[in-house]
Length: 72
Image (cartoon, rainbow, N blue to C red):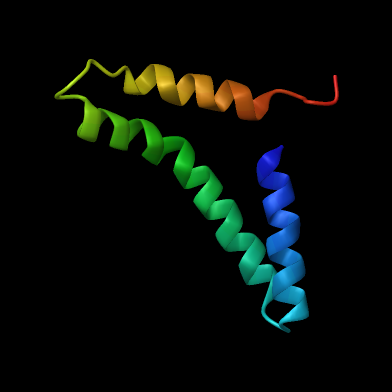
């Protein structure tokens, strides 16, 4: 839900600056989807040698949080 607020602010700033709004939305979408997979991967790579990290579990829980319907 917080990402929706940043998306609106980013889109508004792009619109005010007379930038490419569609490109701004596309980049925000791509980085949001990329973060779902890159966060567990980076945790595994950077923290895996110090503490055990379940990258698959992190990815699944992230998808579950993002897939929930906050209006219910």
